[in-house]
Length: 261
View 1 (cartoon, one colour):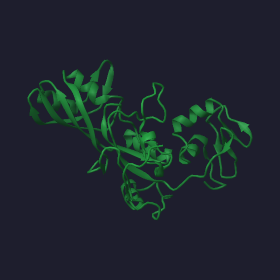
View 2 (tube, one colour; view 1 turned 90 degrees about the horizontal axis):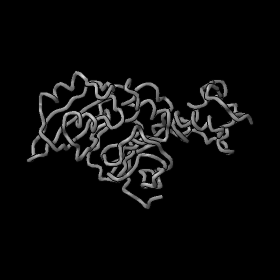
View 3 (cartoon, one colour; view 1 turned 180 degrees about the vertical axis):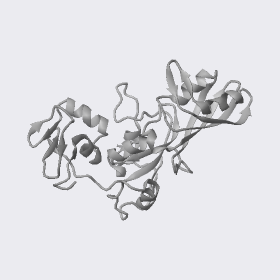
């Protein structure tokens, strides 16, 4: 950020990778952020590179080069930096070499597969927005009798318990006794969306694996494995809005699980 360019404080905190923009607003409400010695009471503040920003009494670190990882989330891990119930989190299980990152969206405790991680909270916010238009695809194992006509009807969207879910693509791949495998694609991604919709259709989800998020694929990543997306690929996929990317920064080196933090 230059000394002349003014940006909202929450955006600056997110860009620095210390938190998401939503978390930044909570931190400000909690009195954890100060600018030029003044504790902020509202996120409706703009700052420039000439301002001194402190978080919890410490200087805000300079924004690092934007980086993105593909990560194969195993089941049994919470997508959170901390969990009130003391359950293990993905961030505690990540290789220590990755440093502090945040997730692009979430996968619930019992879901697995592709999760994107980045050190840039502003990028995470951008990739989460439905306006980005990226389809997330899942392999879903369900228990129960699948009605293909009901699956096809999901392409018109569906309202469940007063909540409107946008069009979903769902196809039957194969049947194994009382179980079946489906391929499901969606762009919105409300909380536990697939599980709630399958329950509405009388189906119980017994396994849920995210295989793609927009142009990024799970591929052959093993559970717990992370792979950094080369900056050149990141620029090609995202187009405008990532001019700050340094093409020398990431080489797409595969990182297997290391000693956990």
